[in-house]
Image 1 (tube, rainbow, N blue to C red):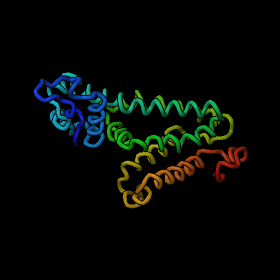
Image 2 (spheres, helix red, strand yellow):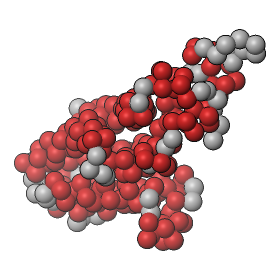
Image 3 (cartoon, rainbow, N blue to C red):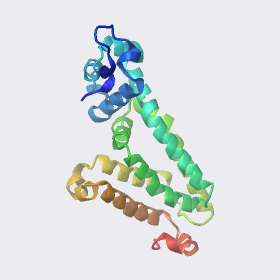
Image 4 (cartoon, one colour):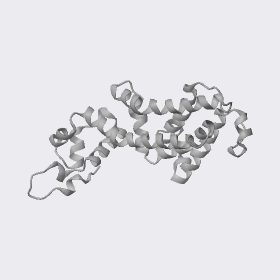
Amino acid sequence: MTCPFSASRRRGRPARADAVMAREDILRQAFQAFARQGYDNVSQRQLAADCGVSDSLLHHHFGSKQQLWQEAVDSVFGPLMQVLQARLDMLASSGDAASTLRQNTSQAIKLMMTDPVALEFLFREGEGDSERSEYLRATYVRPYLARLNELFLQGISAGHLRPLAPATRHVLVMGFMRSLVIPGVLQAELAPHLSDPGKVSDFIDEMAAALFSGFAHTSFYTLHPDSGEKA
């Protein structure tokens, strides 16, 4: 790994925080390291070396590894979740709940795939039993899922969506999202669909349509004949 912070260091002068590093860059570097190596395997000393700064300087500005992890999450993952929430609210303001969820399924997944490192981070760091995992779930994941649940209940009340348990819906969608960045036993089968951005986009559209077909009541397609095949 390389890092741009050392590029601005002035020869012959002591290193200063404002001359050596851009804070957002080092946070992004740390975020990528946590996503790809896992928290336990990230060394602050190695991260500092990769960024061309001393480990004492890194600790001075970011504190402990736990503090660095949380600030990296808030600065990289947080804004992405804010955009997801804003887009969902925008869709909800201009359509019924079922139509909002139908459109949002593919749009949200595509947005997450614009930063696959963030999606990989979500599953690698969010699936444990640690305090960090709980912070990620409680701060970013559960509030977004709660908003989706509100819309889903509205769709059920309108007779457009099937009364599926929230866990059922979330497992289907999150499981698909996980396979995009951690294909696991399906890596050979998924490889042709993940080989370039266009194929990824088409695959997301196909899967989102299949998922929503499972969520939707047949009455939804009667009212929205251009939305796809009946479930």
